[in-house]
Length: 47
Image (tube, rainbow, N blue to C red; front, side, top):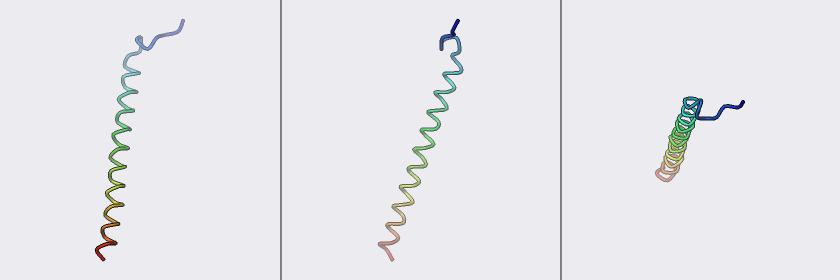
């Protein structure tokens, strides 16, 4: 007899929280990368 997701709610809840955390972390990293790239471009223009 197979079990349904409703019988293991915490497993799926924790997995979705983990995915949301990973997305937020990726967004932060992408923003830092864009900031770094922009700073390099600005520095090249200034000097």
